[in-house]
Image (cartoon, rainbow, N blue to C red; front, side):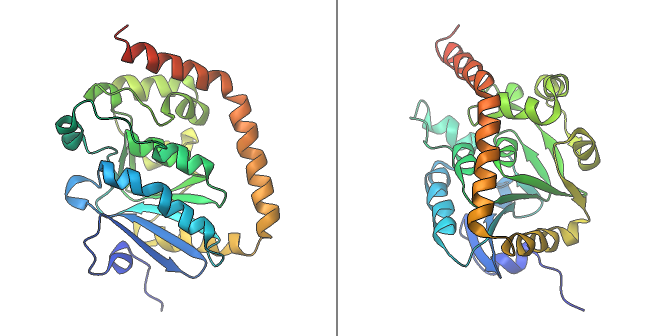
Length: 246
């Protein structure tokens, strides 16, 4: 019997904040700061575009899987660092922009808590596969931070505006089965089989004609962007008003 693929096996002895490992045609990108729920530092966010670009450039990589070191997927931005940095310039492109621009499929393998900026990242992936212990929340309003990576338009598109209002207003977590019922995630699988399932999906993707698949996915992305253009503009205006103190 083969051994289940695990984050521990991908990370090995590395203490790097982000670990990259290939398994067949799938590139795994693991957020590796488990003691702080894999919070993203400014440097991690600066490095993220290069990680995706490297995967896109690698001919042997057909799909990318983004996950986190247990027990969380990620809590988003490192708020402690953010408080210490003060009014530092925003890191651009942000992770949401990078993921939405990816030409190869990116699967979010959510294996625990996925909150705030990390939820924006997951929503920006091609789709989400969740472990049965996964939980999702938007806690932006609780911590006094306006979403800037696409949440205000992406979340209502995924689950409907009324459910999005509930998640944004309460900051409460929903479990994986609720996320599946609401249309936030594509599949829910046992936690020990999460990475194996994502690897199997990646292997199936590898059998497709890469150029044809890229064309199809780009058309879907463009169509989604066109349909949501008004919402994106409203989101940008809302952020601008908030930054101006209105």
